[in-house]
Amino acid sequence: MQDSNPPIQSVKSLTLASLCATLLAGVVLVTAVLPAEYGIDPTGFGEMTGLISLSSSNNTASTGTANACAEQPVAVSAAQAASNLQWQDTVKIVVPAGEGLEYKFHLAKGAALEYSWSTDGAALYFDFHGEPQGDKTGYFKSYKETTDSQSSGSLSAPFEGSHGWYWENKSGAPVTVVLNTKGAYRILGLM
Amino acid sequence: MRPAIQRNIRLIGLPLCLFLLSATAFAHGVDANTERFLLTNQGIAIGPFLYIGAKHMVTGYDHLLFLVGVIFFLFRTRDVLIYVSLFTLGHSLTLLFGVLSHISVNPFLIDAIIGLSIVYKGFDNLGGFQRLLGFQPNTKWAVMIFGLFHGFGLATKLQDFSLPDAGLWKNLLAFNVGVEIGQFLALLFILIALDFWRRHRSYYTFSTATNTLLMSGGLILFGYQITGYIIHG
Image (cartoon, rainbow over all chains, first blue to last red; front, side, top):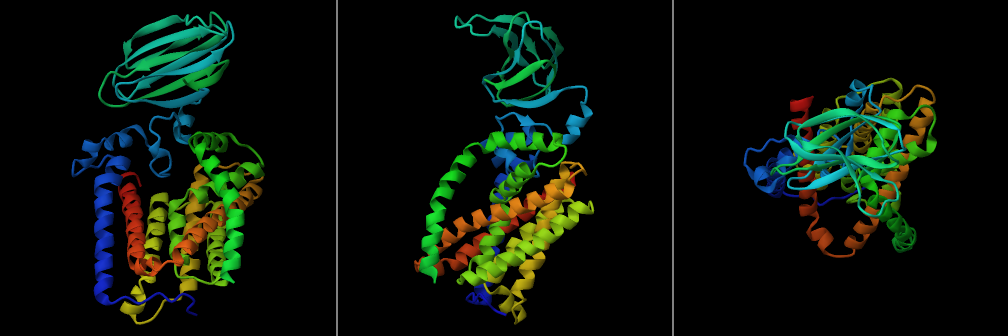
């Protein structure tokens, strides 16, 4: 019945191995896993290393794979999507601390884009703008430019091209934007 | 027997390795895509489900750690095949049964048990049960029973995406076959790595340390999931 023949350790080394395993697991859990996954940070190590910011911006904790990429837009879970049925697309975008990024849609001339986005409370500087297709001069047209924690409305594209938001996070912590959209567009995504 | 197999493993291993490297490069993008696909998919989609199953296994460190524990002291190819087949039988049974009868266990609890299965195997590899109990619990049954739990984990995860009933069993079968393909690929790499290491004395010198680390890994997963259960469960 016995196919593997592991060397049988003495009670002493078994105890030592078990203690080491538990100790190591405890340290890793308390200093890294719990702060990063759940925002539980009894030692303050998560705060110090910035691990704790992973937990507040990302709720897909059960899979463990999606958590490493806080800067990627994450498709929102089924439950959340179901509660926003009137929207065509919902995306979560994490704007890292002190950085700016763009999220764009391709619209034909006259195509409509209905939108509503909000952050988790923090205000972001943003510029809702469009760039004509094929334009190389760097020209863009601003539709709305201010600092706020949310914005909604609709756009009828004045020209064919890429339209979307530039968000800039001037704070010291990452901010998550949840963007809901509906209309005749093609998602270009993060720029 | 072993050198011939090693040569074969290396022959197939290298192209596969390159293939996997390129696959992981896109892993981030695929993840969100996978979720979107599952949420919108209606009807039969053999290819995508094969892929999702395989990907789940290749990137599923909990299943992989358990497999490392299982084959750590299996030196004969025949034994590896028997044990891995038992594990496959176990998790296939509960995967199919779980999804078809809509049994969904709390994912945190099932993943916590999967974590414990790793701790069990690490302790077993240290000869812990033989020392403490005076006999060796049947290793084949243990692998099979823990396989059942791993299968419930797979079933629970698959049911998170409310799958359409139309063509369910075909999609499910595709997912299951994908899991086995993924397991085979992952096992190939684990075996290559272990086989290389086994030629060195350090394999045996460090076997205690390795299995202690395995236990530790299992405990980390256990703590992670149990905390999740307490907070969100």
